[in-house]
Image (cartoon, rainbow, N blue to C red; front, side, top):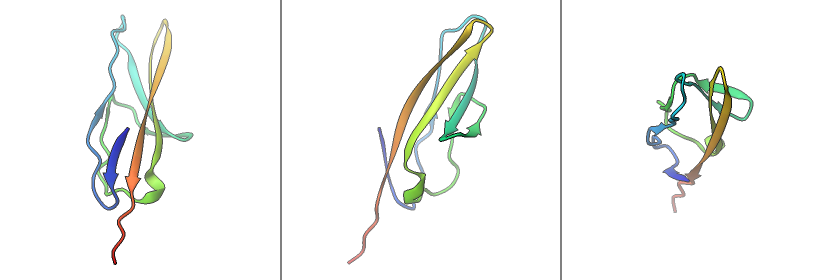
Length: 79
C-alpha cells in the first residue's frame, strides 16, 4: 500500500517480471488503461477520488500475470 497525502504526488511504482520473451506492461485503474510502460508515474497531484487499486498486467506470447497495489489518499483536513 502506498500512502499519499491529498494534493501531493505519488511515488513512482515499478512492475517487473522475469518473462522470456520479455513482457509488455499495462497499468489499469478500474477499467481504464493509464500507462503502457512498466513504470507507473502519476504526474499530477492526487485527490481523494484517485485512491484505490492499481493493477499491473505483464504479458507475452506465453500468457499474462497481474499484480495490484493500493494507493491510499490521505485526506487533508484543516481546522
